[in-house]
Length: 155
Image (cartoon, rainbow, N blue to C red; front, side, top):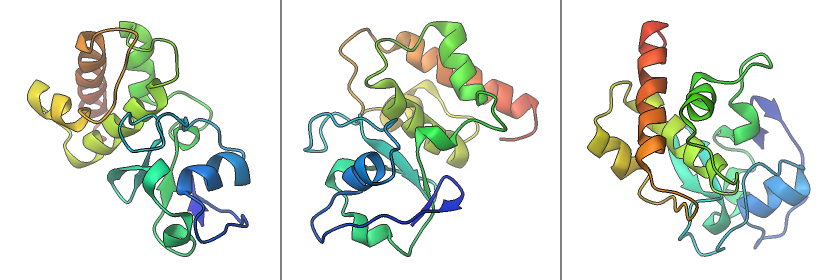
């Protein structure tokens, strides 16, 4: 499968989830194993511009298919992505368990919509649950990242 811009090999069975393949087959532990039911969003990865739940997706569907991006693939040349910087600067990241999934949902949103409204951000992150805090700082971080990306001409 193609993960974070690289072809990667990993043995899977027909019922191996994409999350299991990423975490236990490829050692990419940034995507978290939360509810295993697609309810919490901790396992979110991006596939061809769409945020998907890796815990309810079968790995075989991606073995020779679309490019997958995990949180490990978001940084650019060893530097945090503007979205990661915005989470840091606004205090949006909390315990770290849900943050990778939220970042991946936000990342997919900003790739499709460089100028999202607060309501569009809320909708895009509606599948990601954070039990540590409210969502105000998270929404502010996504807005700040969108502004940074627009200023850099990347949105």
